[in-house]
Amino acid sequence: MRDTTRPLPFPSGARAVFDLSLEGMLLSRRSLLMGLLVGLPVILAIVYRVLLAADVPNRAIPPIDLYALVVAVYWIRNVLPLMALFHATSLIADEVEGKTLAYLLTRPLTRPSILAGKFAAYLATSLGIALPAAVLTFFILVTARGWSGVGASVPDLFRDLGVVALTLLVYGALFTLLGVLLRRPVIPGLLFLFGWELMANLPGYLPRLTLTAWLRSLIHHRPAQEGIAELFGQVLPAGQSLTVIVVSTLVFLAAAAWVFSEKEYVLDQ
Image (tube, rainbow, N blue to C red; front, side):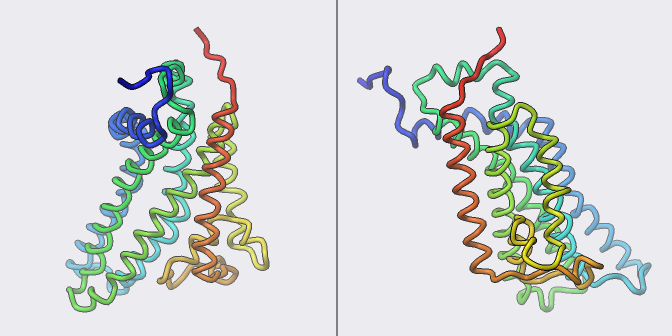
């Protein structure tokens, strides 16, 4: 018989929290809203196909360029970081607000396993929303002029899916840390995304201090026109970019686990 006074091993505890959190996260209004935002390009792609079939836009943007614009600007730069912000900052905050954190903390679970299980649930939920939207958008747009040449673009799709996953991973780790550090992390998170991260479009060394610049450098195909951002946007080495993203993720998660383990939570009755 297992000693119930001792906490579960880390993998078992994380799995238990993952199972407990996943269903509630998938069915939440937050996930529904994020799903609508992430899936909006699918509707755009269908409208594009309809207009192209009706020969309405004689000088329409090429399908592959439109797809690249959606990936680089809409998803990687804006919507996926927002999804990470609203999901990851609430992993512990929702438990505090709902007065259910005490239940978790009194179970035979270590705090790192609680955080790991909830983060895994966030990642599974976010990937389950974002990856199908990316695949659908790709095939709807790239096949707009027929299936010829689609095979040559499929490697770019797989690379894009990897960058989508890395975006959710690294921003999720960062905002998980922010969520356990701050009582109200959303406003600082928004300032980070739409203030600090804008340095990715500046010349010189400053873009290396942003996550956006490293993630953007992992995308093989870039939009044909990005305005002023294209003049200053740097393409950093892919290997170095991947290393920075992975190391940053590990540092953010380790710091979040340490803060959550050491922090005292005073829950209102």
